[in-house]
Image (cartoon, rainbow, N blue to C red; front, side):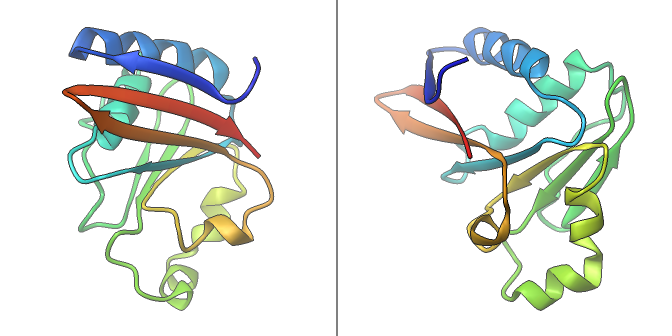
Length: 139
């Protein structure tokens, strides 16, 4: 796949198809940074990818728990760093153990950790005129 890759979503169905494509691309050990405004669909995309991996748990936003872990065909770590103010808070949670594991790790609001990660996928969800522009890059 060539990067960047951009999709346009005009509906829930479109976003589900994009998640299906992403679920075939991502592999255990991958880190995926998710950027977009509140309500742009970051958690929805993770939920749909998890469905494709047969994760039966209710995948929810980890805004208040900070980290959720799920098991299915592929293990998933789902982190939300919106409320984190300093990297030291993440160190106390053992975030590096999750990022450097055999799970796929999704990180919402990743600005704090992006500069210290060596490789990752980055998904940006941009709301424009009632549609979503979803762009995937790889570093």
